[in-house]
View 1 (cartoon, one colour):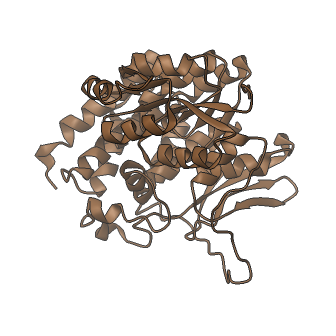
View 2 (cartoon, rainbow, N blue to C red; view 1 turned 90 degrees about the vertical axis):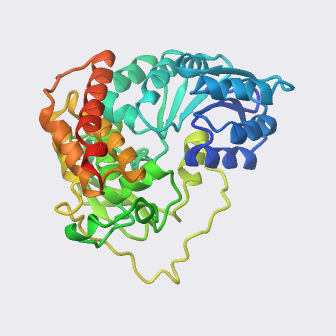
Length: 393
């Protein structure tokens, strides 16, 4: 990673979300090593104003122009310039005074800034799984061509990355991707229809944004991580096995040809994979609870209930179909989760929306970026038209 002086300069997309705020916690802990030069967010001007005043970035992007106008007034007394929309995100991605782009936005808006940052020669710390799920066939070759690093920020993919570090990749047998099971672990199919958004947001272990927390409950999030792991580690999806580990102590494991299994263990705290990506290949101290193996009496495992939580088998189906199908899987889920969070559909209807959109789609084998975005819109329109207010709750 190219650095200027003592600092690693960070452009942070999604700074007001859960991952973004925890990234800034890491920056606060290492002011002599990390410097924020750009921030981007959606519409939370009050929160990002406080971030501007604390971290003094050169450039800030708000997704909504109205929010950008509000922020310009709020920070007029600072040296920070405010831009908006996709053009603003692309300007941040290509700016000279940033060494690494940490992409923590939610959704497919993360694809184009990631590609622009790669083309500008910047390392990528990726917390936006949609980028690889829908455009891995574009991102991975771009990374290889530019010779930059692609560093995973998801706890599971960071764990796999750490376990594979220094190991002969051709001796990898399978990836064991761990899963907490989410807020509804143990519930049966007939119980899910009565679950509300409030119920889904009660994750037992992790502090995450609303959309990802719902995805965790449906196992869609784990399905997205399977597809992401395929691209990150160049493995077949059938060599990725999901294992439920309810305590979220083992973050993932890898098995090698000789039967050896390596696991990465730690307390469930997203600051660990964030910090690891920002300092890679170094490791620096982090103030989180340490595991006490004298009192840790057991680590439990279980198989995921894929009959009840159909997000995972639908993800494998999308991965096997390939091409534009993972985009449809992702976009239909995003649209359906939005409806669920607004109380417009039941929790099981999320699966109906995804499956229906996939059945209606004709796969494009090697989609261009424009075709990826077209498949996204097709899936969203399908869900809006078939799963909106008419279906009720």
